Image (cartoon, rainbow, N blue to C red; front, side):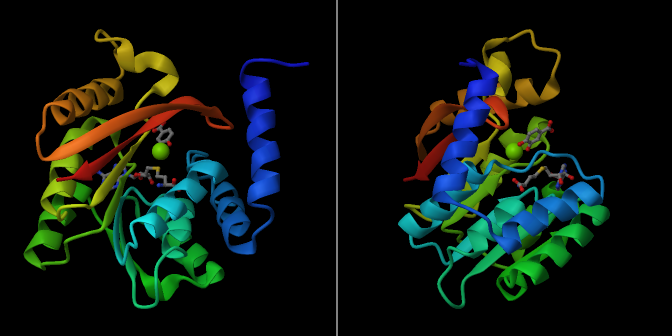
Length: 223
Ligand code: SAH
Ligand code: DHB
Ligand code: MG
């Protein structure tokens, strides 16, 4: 029997087939992303459903996402909302946003999503100025060198009890390499080290294996 990455992938497929199954909105979003030549870096189905469950667990009505891509994770989040709930999702690539908008329409969730196109570091202060927060749940999944800045903004746009999830914090284990030449790894390390000492949040991080390889996510609750 295979072991290592092949086995992780097979187990992820088994779990996704069993626990998620075919879904026109979600499968269509991935197919459209692929057809448009977008990178294959959406969360796995199991992680998407985890985001959905977390949004339900915290009764989220207002969700913020940094990094939309084709909107696969956004659809999972939008489907967890009660009527009248909203996901604000930020994306700097107009081409990604165009594919995402079509995916939201196909999945029937467009009305619950506020897709904003621009650099997140410029859009986040605007959300504060508009008093769009507080957000009940924030998912940070964009350019990794900026994760420490996005996390600071997520805390600012939170209330006590809000949840913040940060994707891709392990990166094949590179996270333990302080000399990594990957700016994303340096950004992740800076985020983890600063959040670990930040009394405003309680945080953990969990390693994952599966169809997206060996990675992990961090999850924080704001005090
Ligand atoms: N959350 C998505 C995947 C996001 S991939 C999912 O799981 O389905 C990361 C996305 O962040 C890409 O689409 C990329 O264009 C976007 N991005 C990168 N830098 C950004 C920035 N500075 N501001 C906003 N979005 C950015
Ligand atoms: C990358 C970005 C992601 O958000 C992800 O989940 C996987 C990979 C990347 O930039 O390589
Ligand atoms: Mg990611």
